[in-house]
Length: 275
Image (cartoon, rainbow, N blue to C red; front, side, top):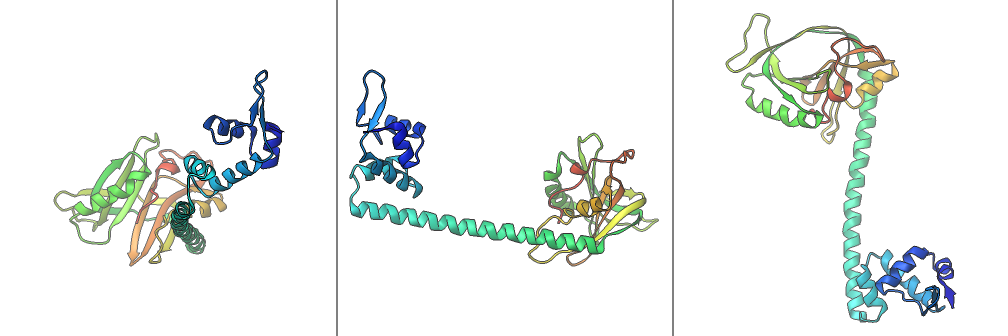
């Protein structure tokens, strides 16, 4: 006879799990000491426990394991169960392979974006902008992309769309603006707002060219590149189209740790999906 501890050592199944199997009637001790309630197992039950573990590793439920172990499942039924499990595992592998390919694609896009940011990053003043556009507020960065789509669908002015984002310093709201360039003396058309963005004496400009399969956030790598230079972005972020799949990213910059007034927290200033 084997104690429950010895059975655990031989099978690699914990004592706690063996007690659980006993409670479910899957592996019942040959004898239970009436005085101590200690469980004793026969040596042959090592095989039952090992078979149970093997079936569980294949993904069978405990009820299916019980039926197979108690010979309630014939060869034909067991073959059908195994074939079904094979199909399930193949489908999971295929789905996981697609997920893995997507993870690799995103990693590659980030790495290529980082190299592009490092190559094109320029530090200098940012020009003032005068736009005819629409504005709105959102609660957090996850809402920016949908709001941009909504505003652009309402924008009647013609021209390349410029997008700006500004997270309020208290973290309460993020202001989103979508508009087109406006000549110095021109006025916005009906239903549009005049949006005037002042120039910034110190900023960063990055040129980002998106490939057809790249859906990553072009801003992801900007703060990394700035951090390598001891800088951080803040305030109002601008995204200016230059052509098909080419966009310029503008943001004010300062030394890391500098508490400039009226600056927005970086974590609330941009969206994870801006294009």
